[in-house]
Image (cartoon, rainbow, N blue to C red; front, side, top):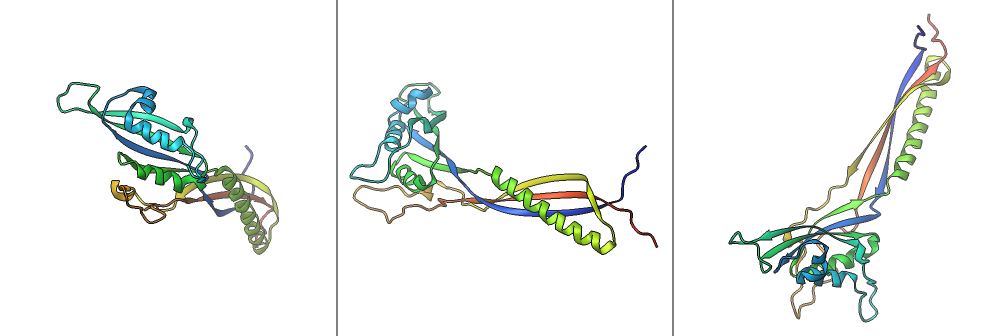
Length: 225
């Protein structure tokens, strides 16, 4: 049975900060009628009003170019009825997911949602391209481990021969963000222009990617005295 070689164990870590590249917005819309399936995006009055506002380019030379209709998804419909009988005239709450692929449009997107009196932003799910950050973090952690191993080996009088074993793990830590309440986005009333920007929430978000490595380096025989 082969015996375990002489090793030294080195622990190292590195943190990389990464900012969100896109986001999903979860919105509820109070509707005055019940329409099931994707037809609700066109035939439920309050929902279709929001969809039209989100997909239509801004007038008068504005920068808003409109979302693609494929960026808006109906996730569910909750029916509200006092009699227990389902009627087309029953009220309903529609749950939508809106994909924002370009965060430079997020402020305008939020302003459009806030202008719809029946729409409420429930939460924002930030999305990241964190693979590159994890790869960069791993390389930096390995560099730190190698530098530390060289110093330890020199101090104890041995030479680094190679790597015997390596364990990598990583975790992500989201930056604290504001939870949205119904009042977080004040509705615009007729004849009143809210101060700009009319937002009570983050429009940019980030997180920290931490990469840890445990490395057992093979070393030359320890000199025993």
